[in-house]
Length: 172
Image 1 (tube, rainbow, N blue to C red):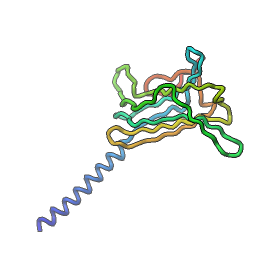
Image 2: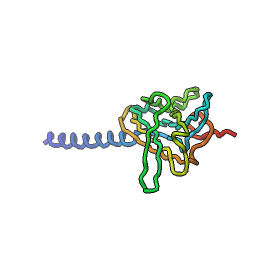
Image 3: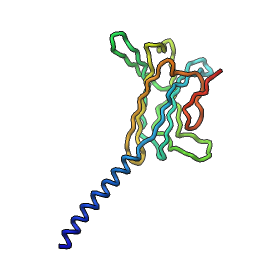
Image 4: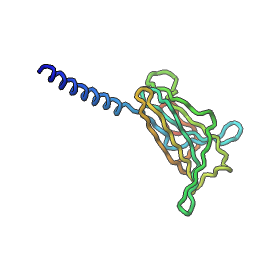
């Protein structure tokens, strides 16, 4: 009869360990902040640059990073059209882990840059910029996707603050 109780204990311990493992995976997922506004500035060549800031608040790297920016035109007939805008620099593959130390490095907060010609993509009341971001937690493999839509009033001239903040320091 002792073998029957061992069998029962084995099943119960397997269920408990599976539930604990599931809970760990469920609660350890990417914590990502995407800026609520797009930062607009002009470079030394007079070209208009748009930046979206991403902050990784996870204590692990974000991998399998994918992102895109679309120019969305809202038509009167209720149909929207999207045109993808390529990033200015080569795409990111990962975002470093969140770091609370006093070091000067803030690689966990990245600014994704787009060089947009305003004559090709005019920003008005019938247009939006749509940014989508997707990344996976390095350890657990859980994925998070975020999409934000920016109207004309959410595009501000200035520079992003450094670190965790997504606040834009506006030019005066």
